[in-house]
Image (tube, rainbow over all chains, first blue to last red):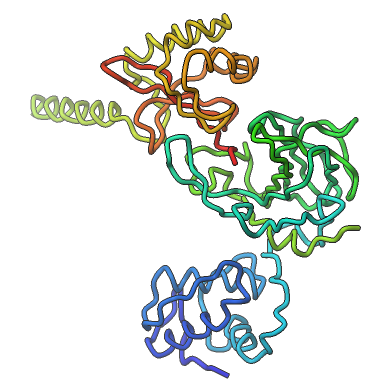
Length: 261
Length: 139
């Protein structure tokens, strides 16, 4: 059990020996935080260490408003120590990040999980993409590769907030605000299901749309999630790296935990 | 004293004018749009509204970079083939009143429609030409 003499992080005393302990603990807990990278253990508090604390607090401690600080007798230090002392195998699925309004386990948006993982091969959230002139951006959702025409179901109860509109390469998108306020963009669809249009109520598991086909011949559900804490268009050019609204979420942990019933 | 204040006011007006005339990437271009572009854009808008693919091609520079609608548009013939797909009624309506703007990373001006689709105009040999389509929703 590691102890520290004073707080580390935002507003902390940041004594080098304490900082080194926290940096080591963060590295030992990396498996518990999605996409966490090893940080430098140098006894200095900079953006890298602060970000690692914030991500740990958000993903593991479950804080919706992480303060970026580890206190001597605080929850964050306890959680860091628990991660070191707990058996590492088998590792549980990472807990979805705390987000306003998403308190339930979602229904998976298809009736079966796709054969190809949405966490590899360019299908994952954050995968690199290029603009028409070779600029860089990041993939804003998870791609669920399935045949054209596959039914798409609502991940929770909700209301359609926008009629299907042009999305990309001959496909369309449908936006639903689900109970609790989070928003899902069901992208690369061919059409909405009969009777599903702006203002429609939808129920968890209800077929709301069908997978479309890109001009390249591939077909998938492009799944984007938003916390619902911002307003306006979901696509925001000039907001790197995703070119999306500020409340964009990584859907991966929600899809991981989603059920097929 | 009055003369000093007057000089100071003139200096401040000069600074403000200079600051306002600087075009900032990522901002709406507003009054800073070059007249050469406005002239081309006016002709382009008329051609799009009329569904005149030949005239749009005449105002374009090939190849047109594109990450949607089948990719790079290599020739006027390919533009004509894809014209209806690119210039849907919603896009035609957008072009009627959308103002060009600048974005970081693109050297020319963009007309953005439906928040995601950008149609770019770049200057070549002193003339602006349509040369770029970028869909921010592209895979």
